[in-house]
Length: 204
Image (cartoon, rainbow, N blue to C red; front, side):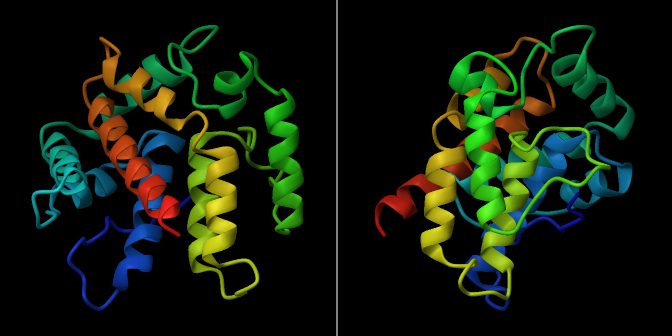
């Protein structure tokens, strides 16, 4: 998965598109699995300038990183997203859109991924509708060199079809879960960012 460094909201050199791609990469890292301590420390050492909801959510996550460690994050991740039997919180789009895993939304996603020339590798256990994978696809659609793929229309179409219909429900489940301590901040950051993305796409 991604090892993208946390975004700098005020970066004049990287630009807005790189900042978007970086944040998608961070969200993929947060939700793909427990983060290593070096990554936790990197986020903890960062700071976003500004008083917007996205900047505040980032700074809250950074503060949470400074107050925890990789072992505690791993324990919480396993409790929330893995567990014994059914996870307390599902990270898969099909579950929120159909009530079951591996259903029609996943088939539609695979069709769209194939059209983009993308497919899951054999080494990846999670199905393609995992939120971390979808964030990685969005990062790819922002950064790829092929302008026929990496364009705003492709980003808007993919986001509207495969993230927007269910990501808000996922984020709410994380933010409101009684056992979410660190990850409630990750859920809030994801919600704020997805809301910003929705508003921006609506304006295009």
